[in-house]
Amino acid sequence: MQSTISIEDHLAKIYAIWLREFKVFLREKSRLVASTFTPILWLFVIGSGLGAANPTTVPGVEDYQQFIFPGIVAMSIIFSSVFYGSYIIWDRKFDFLKSVMVAPVSRGSVFVGKTLGGMTTSLIQASILLAIGVAIGIGFTPLSLLQAVAIILLLSFGLTSLGLALGSYMYSLEGFQMIVSFVVFPLFFLSGALFSLDNLPSWLGMLTAVDPATYGVDALRNATLGVGSSPMELDMLILVGYTAALGFFGIYSFGRMKAV
Amino acid sequence: MTAVDNLTLDISENEVFGLLGSNGAGKTTTIHMLATLLKPTSGTATVNGYDITNQPAKVRASIGIVFQAPSSDDMLTGYENLHLHAMLYSVHRRTRKQRIEEVLELVGLTERKHDQVKTYSGGMRRRLEIARGLLHKPKVMFLDEPTLGLDPASRESMWKYVRRLVKEEKVTIILTTHYMEEADMLCDRIAIIDKGRIVALDTPAKLKAGLGGDIIRIKTKKFMQQDIDKIRQFSFVHKLEQSDGFLVLSVDNAKRDLPVLLQNVEAESAEFTSPTLNDVFIQLTGRNIDKEQAEGGFMERYAKYD
Image 1 (cartoon, chains in turn brown, red):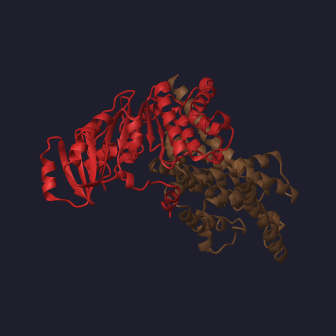
Image 2: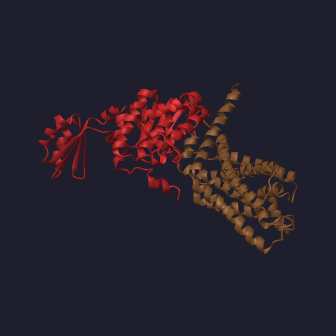
Image 3: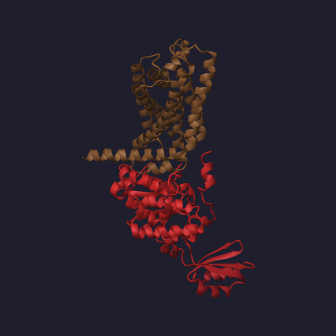
């Protein structure tokens, strides 16, 4: 009985943290607009531009715009999830973090609540892109849609954890900009979002293999286009592994984080 | 770096206890340690019977805290901020709404509860923090410089709310301040901290009485050594100092003693004051706290992150 109450109590606190993140997200409309606009720009400008120049470079899919669609969905998740880590720095800056740290709530609950907040944001943005996908001719079945949502949630859990973990070690937003250059862009470019993983030079192939986002992109490609470099099961297995590892890294980092 | 060094304190239930000291004296560090946000390098303390190093969760559940700088979320309304913290402090769902309304009423924010905090004034934000700290009926409430940066009117209304808190919520209050007047008016007992150590601990009245009576300042045209020697002979003169053309004396009773003194020196002007806590502070630390700049202002908070 004692443990039931304590689990309920933990869940209520996680919900409280998530609710705050969600309300702030809803009130900052510019955030949603800005972060959805960039992927759309990529999809239409790069998709159509490069697609017109090299219409047949990608095996399995006729249309380059359709080919990069899963990559662009992954891109929106990579950016919004890792960037989510910067909100922990804002919280620290405005002393909100201190008020949460002094409450009887575990670091783990704070971490999970925040991560769920980041996942919610990513899912909303990705859903807008999925709707656009329908418009550019991606055929969804209920199963492929369900698979896509699961992949989106897994990938964003892992990358939000990574962002929050990195944010927990940093004290300035300027410092977090470094993360963009050294984490966000490599994660995106090496994920194979814009090119096929088959027939890559070996050095590039090795780099793409260590990028967790690679397996998100490939899984999304398997789910939405029916083509992929690896089988869906393998993608998912590796993705789950990465996500769990990044989740532990996040919880560990939050545990070490200084309160003041 | 040692901010707080060998500090020993014993604070009783239901008292208003003041930690008085200049900037950097170690007040906030002490509060942060008692609130389990910082670990002491040695030693420990108990808050509401719980050990701050071994039972931090229990300590946290028994305390409320108002930080030096407001820490509510600007984007949320006052009500939403309180609701968030009510959940974090496990205030039961059935009593949550009622308790939030109670604390809003106590700090006079009922009218503005559905406005976003970014529209609040500095004084209102500080009051919201107090309301937040009270949600879970804590046994001990920490107020870290509760009136820092507030205008005189907001400061006075803050004092009013602190007194109400003591009366209606029956909490023990530990407040830090570097405003002497504030400590004098609000606190039952005061610990004066200097460089991380307690240099005095008593009720404001006893601290002032400890200075040995009133202070007389006489401006003389010229200091005559024989006059000074004569003054020193009076039994009611406890201390005599010269500074900036002033003769500063501490006497038993200025009203009675000043006329006697004026017969013995050629004075240009004379004034006397009954001792204030500031005088106590100057005597103990050799520095004047009222002349020191307040810390933690808006610009400083920004500079901190550059």
